[in-house]
Length: 111
Length: 131
Image 1: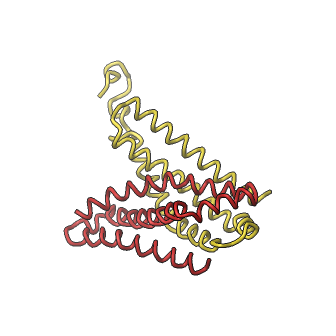
Image 2: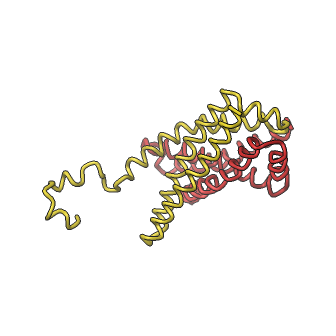
Image 3: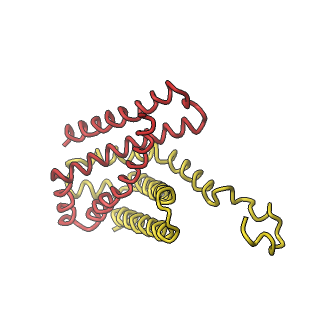
């Protein structure tokens, strides 16, 4: 059950990151354009919606990354059987959440 | 096997060699894995660079993004990431869209999106480095 869910989650987070690059492009172009454009982009990232998008992007990035590691392990034929594959799916799910929270704790503490 | 089989002078084996069962699918699957491995450290580095810029003013951000090492690492992240996401989205389209015409358009649109986003991001980083 969870293995199936994490498999589709891999695609959903991948698609999310795909469209998330729009935000990254905006931020980079704003930084390259000048102080006013950069201030506008930064203002948006600071709003609730902006933060939610960035938080979602962080979560998608780490969950997709761990999902990728999971795929690589299973590409070698390991952890395909009953208990291990569930542990791996669990690790992907919780690892992604933990890493996201870790990054945001760091972000808020250095701000 | 298509109609060409009877009219072509090429042997059936010659016609299908290097195509695999999924045409370019095997090549894409390999490139997907190569970029995935590359992205593992590059994405972590990218997150670290962004974290180091949280709350910093415009000039600091500009100076950091434009200095050689961060710029090179971000460019590598962008190149591997954009290619990886283009292949991934192609896979999603091919799996879920079944109309041949619609699929072709979406695969094309996917390439345009990846090219535009990739070029825009890379241009921005290069501009921060050289202007």
